[in-house]
Amino acid sequence: MAKSSSSSTSAAAAAAVAPLPATYEAALLELEGLLKGLESGQLPLDQLLTGYQRGAQLLKFCKDRLEAVENQIKVLEGTELKPWAQE
Image 1 (cartoon, one colour):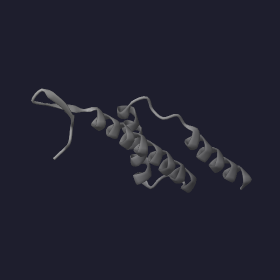
Image 2: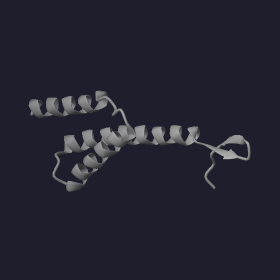
Image 3: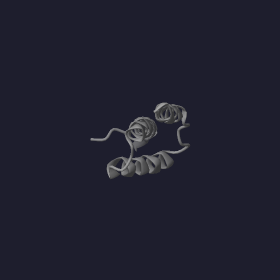
Image 4: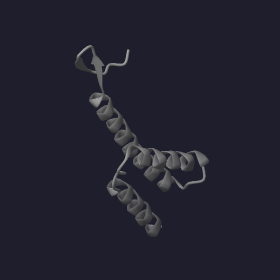
């Protein structure tokens, strides 16, 4: 049993320190893959937890990237650049 506990601790630690993808698209692909694995119902409990934690990291990364892009988009109104606001 100690091996299983050690294995799940190692898996959780690996997910916690795994580097984030370089792009939004890469993060989205990884997130979609994790979601398929989680939804399959075939993963052991420790892998489910690790996948959930990694998914939360990727989701935050994607939200932050989208927010940053949204803040950078400008719309030309007349002769003045204004922040884009979705109406």
